[in-house]
Length: 275
Image (cartoon, rainbow, N blue to C red):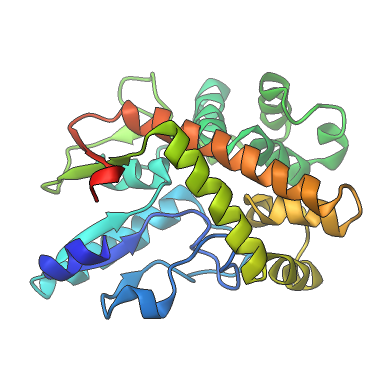
């Protein structure tokens, strides 16, 4: 993305639901300043880990950045793996009026697909811990039903055709979509090496620092890396077990991302081995 932005006079807008947070660098694999090669990067380090940040917060900020970049006759590159963020911008989602519960259910299912079931369960726990403790985190159906009991219906958004939790409007941008396709064994090897490097670079220390400042149950702290290392620091598992779990769950997350983007239309897939 940096090379493309340099070649085509562009700036990068990060579409990563974890790199949006300040102080969370190693665990989110945040691009280092020296690696940005003087290409401006936006929506990295935008909010603190204990601040609420939604898909529509991202959409609003991203659209402001797009307008600013275009006014300076440059090209915006939206880069990242949070498909819901990207879709909200390019399909021009809007927040609707107070919806019925089935629409909230659809939204939460989208979030579970993108971020994992435990992410949705942590939302329920933040709303009503007593209710959450009755339900296993991997039982998505009951987690969503629990949220329906306690959450305001204003959480969700509506669709013109009543079959989606979002209202999609006419796209106001001319878009080219690119995605990288890695052979499965190569992708998994890259993930394993990345986890080892994160530990070497100080993921344990970074997690310890974050836990000294922020609640472990915050949605931001459910991120891959911090969640597993927090279990190690809390003596719930050994370091080797935490590393193995992180590698396993990162592979699962990568698989969910590939499934998500494989459903996107008009994507140009690039073989990662040819980059």
